Each structure stands twice: as structure tokens, then as C-alpha cells.
Image (cartoon, rainbow, N blue to C red; front, side, top):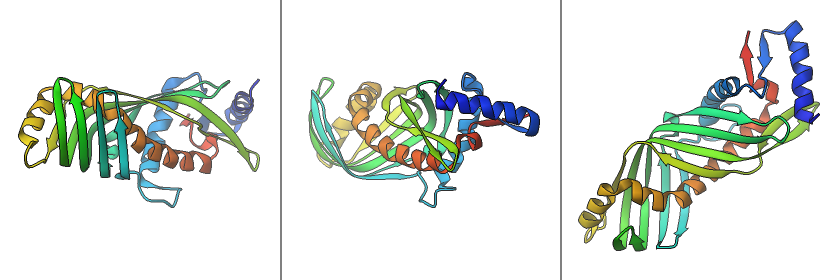
Length: 232
């Protein structure tokens, strides 16, 4: 029996007799998801961490070196994570492998860009300011978790992640290159999901690395029986 599984069993036995707040069975994805929703607001606000909010997030430089296009994004800001909520949380109690689906109503990306290559069927060589707004955007994290013991209490945190993205709603682009923005904006917005699929992963992975660092500060600051619980 794994350390986490053993801990869950012991806590459940104790809580059934003495507490109105009970640790989730990790086979119960509804319980884990509801607990993740409660924790998300604390993570975003910086509560318990003593650190700035995760909304917005900032990155000085992001590089996308892709098969058909190369771009740089400078002084980038991602805002709107307050408009997100966990839709699904799964954790394997034996391996701590996890899946975490974060649904976002409205995300806004802003920064300065340089881009060269081909977007779909359109050759591009442009630089300027850019703003991209994504609606109903799903961020899917999958990876390995890890546990630590501090003063006899077990915490679990994210060891690594792979990011996948589903643009369920529209994505709106506004490129401000004075010479080429009209043509670029027309193409990008007429083919927004194709353009987004080409460009998004380097940008969002970089931002989510910062977000996951903040999540881990939160997860390590509390034992798991104070996070993944429900009222009875």
C-alpha cells in the first residue's frame, strides 16, 4: 500500500469517528474536483502563500521555434485566470499521476511580438504589439505528482506536467504592425482556431510553468487532508 493510500485509509477511519470534514477518497473524482474549486481561489489570490496573485502572470520573453514559424513575445502578460474554474481533477492514489482540467471563460494575452515564417497558408514577417482574447478555453494538465512529509503531515504537489489545450470558443487577434496589421488581422481572425493551434503551446506552456510554481507553493504549504476534503 502506498504512503498516500495508507494515509487516506488512516485519516478516513479517524475522521469517520471524530470529524465533520472528511478527506476525499481519491477514487472519487467529484470530491477531488469540488475540493480543487475551493482551493483555486486561494491559489489565485495568493492566500496562505504570502506571494502576489497569479492573475495576471508576466513573462519577459517567450520563444516559439515551430516547424513553419518562428516568433518572440516580449513583455508578455496573461490575465483572466480569475475567470477559470477546475472542471475535473483526477489523482491516482498509488502513483499520484494526475489529470487537471481548467476551464477559462475569457483569457487575455498582451505583449510585443516578432514573427517570421508561415501561418497556415499565409507568409508572415511582422512585429509590433499584439492582443489575443480567448473565450471558453480549456487547459488540460497531465503528469506526475509527488508527496512529501513534514512534521508527520503528508502534502502532495505537482512534479511535472504536459499541457494540452482545447479552444472551445472563439479566439480574437489584434496585431498592431502599422504596415501589415490589416492583412495579418484579417487572416488570423478568419482562421483563428488554426492560427491559435499553431502558436499557442509555447506561450501557454511558459505561462503555466509560472502558474504551477504558485500552485506548488500552495500545495506544499498545507497537508492534503486540509485541501482534498468535504463536509458531512
